[in-house]
Length: 233
Image (cartoon, rainbow, N blue to C red; front, side, top):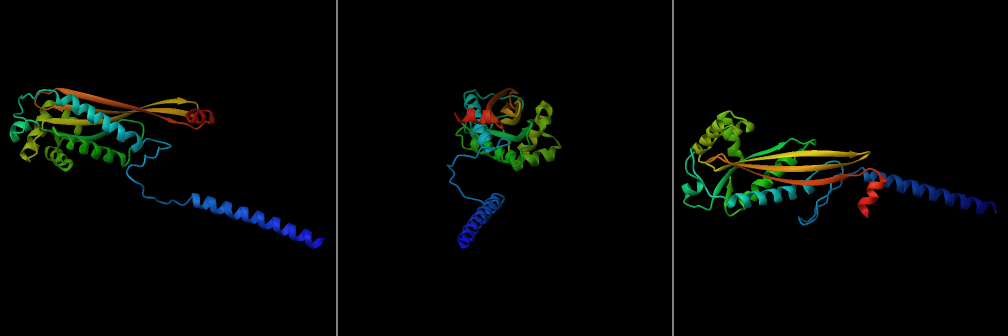
C-alpha cells in the first residue's frame, strides 16, 4: 500500500516537472527570433504599434497611379525653362520626373520605411509609358552642387537654378515631385485610430503649375477586449 502511494506521488511529481519543463521551453522559444522566407504574394504583416508596408505600399500605388493618370492628360506647355524632355528626345510621350524624396510630418518614426517607400514610388514612375524618373543619386548631386535644400525648391528662382544644374549634368527634367506623410491620431481610452495620409505634389517646372494627389488609410490599434472582439466580428 505504501509502495503504491509512493509510486503515485512520484508519478504526479514527474508530471508537474514535465509541465514546468515544457512551459520553460515554450517561453524560451518565444524570446528567440527566427526567420522564415515567404513568397512575395504572401500578405504583409500588420504592425502592432505603427504602420509599415501594409499601409504605405498600397497608399503609394494608389497615389502614383492617380497622379500620373491626371497629369498624363494635361497638354505640355513650354515657358522660361526651355523645351520639354519630349521635345529634346523627339519623343512627345516621355516626361521626366525629379523625385526629391519623402518628408515625414507624421507622429511615427519611419525608419527604413522612408527609403523603401521612396524606391517604390520611383519604380512605379519608371514603369509608366509616359514618365521617366531621374536617379536619386543625381538628385542628391544636384542639391549638393547648388547648396540647396529640398524645401528651397518650392521657390521659383531656386527651382530654376536646380533645374539648370541638373541639365548641365545631362539630367534635365519636366516635373519636381514632393512626397509627404502626415498622421492624425484619435484616442478612445486605451484604443486608438491613426489616419495615415500620403500626399504627392507634382510641379511642372515649365509652367509652375502643381498637381496634388492624396491617399488616406486608417488603422486601428486595439488594446481593450471590447475593441478586439468588435474587429473579429
